Image (cartoon, rainbow, N blue to C red):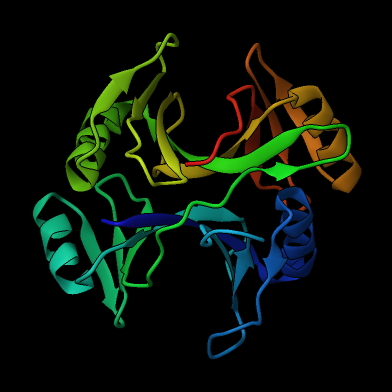
Amino acid sequence: MFWMSAFLDVPGPDFERSVMFWSAVTGYSPSARRGADSEFLTLVPPAGDDHLRMQRVGDASPRVHLDLHVTDPRAAADRAAALGAAEVVDAGHVVMRSPGGLTFCFVSHPAARPAPPASWAGGSLSIVDQVCLDIPTASYDGEAAFWQELLQWPLKGSPYAEFERLVRPDGQVLRVLLQRVGDAGPVRAHLDLASSSRRLEVERHLGLGATVVAEHQLWTVLEDPAGMAYCLTDRPAQPG
């Protein structure tokens, strides 16, 4: 895998305001629409290659899925299936589900240049630089092993017992954090932002239409206008 990008899958009624929100949050411009029903777009950074995309979906709730950029999607899908993933459809890009039920895709779009953090009034910096996989405890060990083997990124612990992370290689924007959660159901994912001033960034996001769900020592949980949860963290905002 030479690149990873994240897709925000947003129900139709909330899609346009979600596009406006995430464009304002990131400072990235929405691309021209594409797809049979103009359902896809890319959030294009001012510099570097994109790592965030959006899709209008018919589901009732928003979600996040991953695109893994590879030279040969078919071969990558066969390898993922051997590791326990299920193939959904091969449409040139291959849609898969992890053993725990998280949707991801193998695509071949070229990308190699990490976007820099965005600067905001007041001097704060921020960037969407992490996808957190929310994994029910019952399926955690198998799912964590799957992603470690699939990505070939080393697994590392954290000071918090419920978290582990896969060590991001140089040249990637997105990190992968693994979180044990107490509920049941399929594996889910949410986005995390690094920020130089979490206080300033929370204020900015609230002004754009976000709501605060919970405050923690090192991060704040918010929801966007479509009800999609994400986190602002104290992790330094640095290029990939």
